Image 1: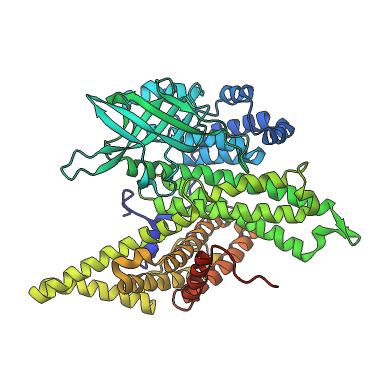
Image 2 (image 1 turned 30 degrees about the vertical axis):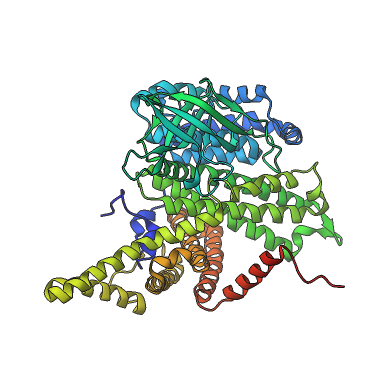
Length: 583
């Protein structure tokens, strides 16, 4: 029986296990929620479909009109995840992700404005707030009377959240907040800030810890800077937020004092299905644009859609979109089903979907040719808008290290148990024997592939069995590499960034492949092989390409040019540039 408090599909992969109960069957939305969702999607399209020219004009101007924000409020788009008891729609992660997908089909800045409010701006209140805090603020957040913003990033603290310098010091029963937050989405229009600040630990060591606070905009001492002039998502509001001697009561503390770092990570993990949904929406729009463009644009006397290299681009875009939708849907389903430890899976969904959108935007612009470069067409704007996704809510480089290290942590725990067991063998041989035997059996399973009578996959459709067997073999290999790398480096594994990146990329490909296999199994069971023929093709294409990437990454953990690349980089750093100009 799977324990939904601690089970993690990806972490189990590094242990050589495939916990298929977590990912099969593919998550399905409740009928009642689906019915409400369809009405919301119709409203979104009613509001946004006629505004294409407005979105382009707002991008050029770098601002979204206040009157349009009022329309977003009137359509209820700020209350998507607020519980019905507090005036919202009470959507789960899957339904919420689907709404952001639909908004993103029309405009990235609008999707970001709504998403930053619900995904992270007020998510902490939903996850950690007291009943009194929820009753006080959620109704106004649901209507959009208060728009929310998430205030973590600072001039010296981006991906390194632990470097936050904003402080909150005790003042009787309350706190005094001082500091500056940078690049805050919705910063200039928000009435509700979730703010992270260093606070004294209260321990004798004198160390400071981070605490999360609810900070209403109407308190004295809060100001915002001018709207930032950005490369993309230009119409979304981004500003600095300054806190000068802002007095907060004890009721403004969100969660536990000193537990702010964990709170920030939990908020970001919970909100990533929204970002992933937005990426999927952008991809679907680009595929629609590119297929029409390819059919209408003629070269050498025929539509470019007839050329193989163009079809290769379009086919790859569809595979990327289906794969992204599958992994985002799977992660949203984990959240809706009550799984608590899905941080690695959420990070992978963000990694994959943001990079897939970037590839899709690039290919769509390429298919459009010169038109793609012109502002009167939407391609160049989508490319600019898409670029930020790989940076905010955790840079993809940091997330790769997080994925690998978190997944490896379970292997490290087991190795610790083995060391403890070895001590037991030396002291009391009979007591320690079982631990060593279990570990030896696991290693034999990984190396030989012997898994007894039970296959790792038992719920796959027969048409996907061959692909499932490939995944099983790859899981054994990555478990062996994980074990070996931890033995080789021990605690120093945290510094092996090249190996960690390769392990992370392997885990990304494995999770996305399994998400596709789960989804296509459902399609095959519902419609048969003829009805799900195209989805079966997508599964085969992605799984084979992923297998090739995984094998390459496994090989390059040992056989690589990492030392040479580092040497070249060191030389460039010493020169502060490139050193081989031709005469």
